[in-house]
Image (cartoon, rainbow, N blue to C red; front, side, top):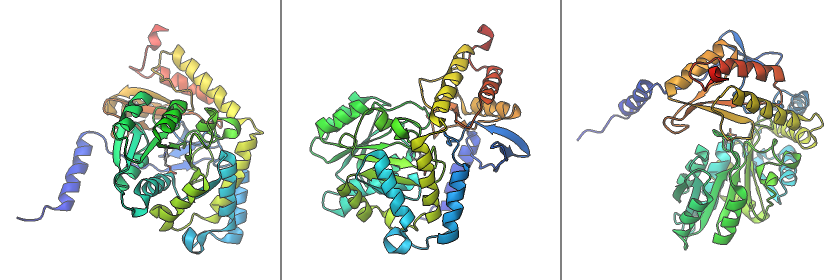
Length: 404
Ligand SMILES: *Cc1c(COP(=O)(O)O)cnc(C)c1O
């Protein structure tokens, strides 16, 4: 029997994606001086990024980055546990722990690595006997890296219908004698709605499961001092022992962290391979993130309020136009279109009108639920939002403009 050809197999899979019209492509999006995007020679207003507070190009962040780079250089040259851990990292970890009301935080280079690493460490129990027994219960719409993290750990993964705490309870009850972790996005990245955090926290306490919240899209924008969806729900470190956050969204830099009590964080440091075996993030990036965190917590410019006003403006306008908005109250305001083809068509039409709104297609979202994932930022102007609404209103087949 001859060995199957790997190249032929992966090429067949790619060709299949192409036939389905689901190929993806990285487009080069330069930044203009006024914060718009230059794409294929055209200037577009970006309504699909995650820079919710408009901090990514803030002068304080740029100054902190360049100041630190002048001293520290660019690369750290080693992993945190070797010689790559600098004062800026340690200070940022303390700032993040303080901000989120937890004993300790540990930095990761990206959010994907944080979820892979933390879940692998917590569920895998450092390779002790019993590894592979753990149960990991997750919302069906959780971020891909949470799903992958559970699989990397060799845990039994059970996914409950989106936002359904009772279904989560049944899944925990099905394996009463296995160590368990329940993980959810705080704000769902493709739908923009918020998890039933209080119900899930109660459930986890009753069923003795470790509760893990990925708040990539809540941190910076929700709750007092922007401390996120968990703080906004009035939950503390006892109720949500593990909080994961990313720095590349509302904080406008890059990287991620996991915060929790001393023992949990220490275990993650010992066992999370995506932490142990990777080069520490540039110290200048940590410095820029500390500058961002100061702006986020104080919010003297009223960026959160501005964002809230934009969300209300967009939703009111969209409803008036009969657009199929979802229940989201956050900066993520998706319009589900249906077929991947139709979503691509809508995206192209918006681009012709001067807006960058990339279509999100399967497998990132379920079949038949391709969408325009519109995101709002405090950096947008009200006029830009009105102009987007006008463009959406004139898209064929999107809601009932004519009926208004
Ligand atoms: C973006 C995102 C991540 C990954 O974070 P990166 O820093 O971009 O790797 C993880 N979880 C959720 C919910 C996200 O939206």
